[in-house]
Image 1 (spheres, rainbow, N blue to C red):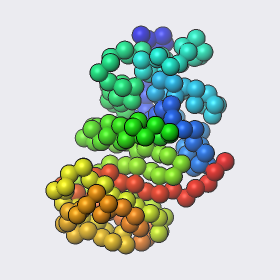
Image 2 (image 1 turned 60 degrees about the vertical axis):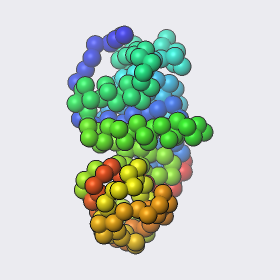
Image 3 (image 1 turned 135 degrees about the vertical axis):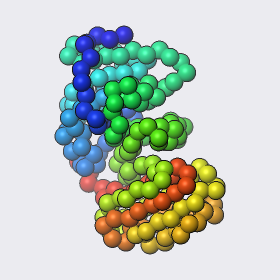
Image 4 (image 1 turned 90 degrees about the horizontal axis):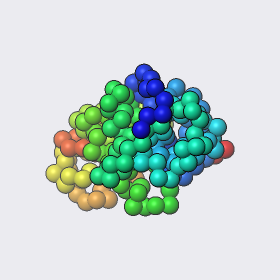
Length: 216
């Protein structure tokens, strides 16, 4: 269901989900400065609390009052029960050639949904560059090689779903050299040494970088 004529979008967007309201000043700043904001279903209420007007609201819309949404905002109702609201939104981004995505409000009290969000994002690693932001962490995904800018001595954790993943890192306190993670916790609680580090991996890798917390 489209209630507003579609419009061209930037190649990057901020997605707001219906999770915990961010309190980190850096995340609030990202939201306020975003050129294009898309709400994942009832993420619209979170956007409203933050005085942010999205360009699109998308989902099955079972938890948002459409009548409260401004007529200037594109509403897309997708009732496909085989995909959740985040998948619907990511598929929309793909259809609009939006490749760089920052996802906010995707974490909260539902641990099952927190994990599902990470796993869903991992499934799109070949098509989208997704960064999930909580008040504490930036969560990103690497498949191949990637460089990161970071504050020195910032906590960095690596998690692989593939035990045979061959990983090489540079710029971390405990580097890997064409090695496998020996256990699920092997890559936890590492640290950046300087202002950047790099990762090379043979299979997808989940990267957690801890934020410097600046609450509003």
